[in-house]
Image (cartoon, rainbow, N blue to C red; front, side, top):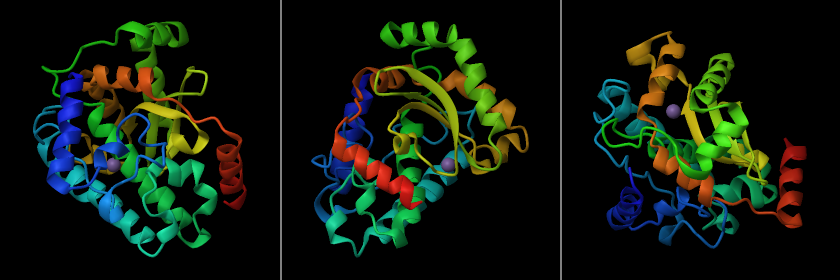
Length: 264
Ligand code: MN3
């Protein structure tokens, strides 16, 4: 899929909800407090960008409807609830809440912000890096393709590594392809809804390995789900994230992150 979809998605979100929810899933928006959530300061559920049955047969319609319409919606609602009486945090992006301003999040809501802010960011990424098989670019090109080749020995090897991490993740979590501040790629998994943003890595691709993501169709066969999903990767979006998203690099942000970690 092209950038057209990305742009129309953001615009549609804006028109539909009156919120700048698109900012939460676009370059920089995760990081920059100036890319505020919007009027009303509430996070919103982004649209999928395709029909819930568009990823069939790899991801079934019912799973998509429940996953997006119930699970993701609950993360958004609970994030808004956690931030309800926090005027100082109003208008901050998820990235700011998890990283730059993490030290300013009161301890009594910190875990709720990590779980639900992470859940919102992770799922927003997830929908955008997948797409209908007949519409997505079949393989990465350009700088990302080169980085995958030099870092992992090609896309198949990368997929093996991402899937291996996903299979090893005990319980619920995500398996990721991330970019560090030098642009180097890494693969690892995180528990629950922990976001790679928390370690100042930009997630550029990720697979949800919570059972709710695959159980209706694949039951206990997480490995089959992981293998199948590589057929519906929206490589244009993964490339965009690799090319465009930059990490902040200021002492202030590092201090905030350090404090947040120490406070855990
Ligand atoms: Mn999920």
